[in-house]
Length: 559
Image (cartoon, rainbow, N blue to C red; front, side):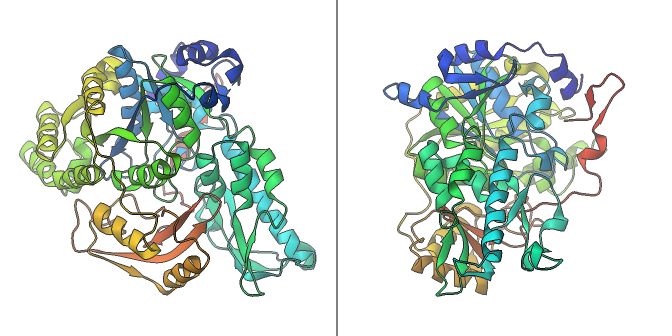
């Protein structure tokens, strides 16, 4: 089989205006970016305000291996499969960050015969949204330091500056830096750091803003620092930065329209990283999709304990949307991994099946997480090359034992939408089932109670320990009136706990919360658990080493 990049490069794409027409957009509601991409007007929601909403289906997963289990591939194949059975689906995906593209996971277009295209464009600079987010973030940082240098009219305490700069690249050397060296002309020296752009509050604001006015208001509400005069918060509005930031983000706020290999529309918008950010597509993409499609397939990052939990407790809570069903992606490789062995053809059959059975404890825990939200769950067994029939069937049967309403094999990678048609039938049936969607915590719960509820009811922790910095932040944010905000947990995606070495379905563990950040513009609090960092680093053999240009000028090695 050809590589995913070769398949994407050889695909015959439809003109973007044909995709827009298929989606139900009026000619004045999209602006082409070349032949195969477009920006979509936010006015679509107003035009279709009285139209019924489609069904929202969240694609989540079990606790993944480092390489990921193919949630994007499953989301794309499910969308193509729904098209095969006569539905009119619309796909909502997150924009790829250059961090994972050149890191370990590669791009975020799906794979094989289930991709969104143009693959190279969307995995690299796309329509410039992430660059715009970084520019707006760093404009605020520059204005902050300029204000301190030029008389410090807001009495900013340099030791309580909370705003960081952002870069769309994995670069661990920038986690902790000192700036302002070289004399007064370069500003005052202080310690700071960088976040990866997808984890910045500006990206979070882009993801939840409903329109330009909402975006402008939220940007002004960002807390950048505290004053040395009573510790009063200093905002982006105080610095006069919000207006210029909004101008930089005006086009980025519009979702991007692309297509699957089989011509279904996809809105790709906002950033990834459900371990250190909220990890979902934008609210406006979901709202537009619900008016245009009979089924909106939206992918949440990593396991159900990560992006799915945040979609429900943050986005659905604040956005007033209601999911109908969940698709939980599982693979033979992941269950073997959690069962104590790595997926290796040299491992004898009996031992491999035993590892799958043991690793199913992780699958069952994730099924329990979905049940805690009151939603029906279909398990998609994402078939990978080398998976045997008996291994795949064992995963299916274990999923049904764990409470899935259905478990179907997803063979979309090799067969496109046809290979996901049975999965699509099962998902459509699950979305039609009655459900009682519920959230993990109440708005009025104290901050520590919200964290404890997520830790116990979602992760399975027996307790939470708050470090001194976290305890101080809880008191401060409660005094500031921020205790009604939802929480956006930052922790490793490789375990249900905060320790990436604790695989499968750990019990009796304690969740350590070392600090909490306030995203006052986005409207949530970010507890930092364990050793999680909001600026990832490259590994010893990053994907960037495989990317190159061949003699004919074509990209090679991108996946």
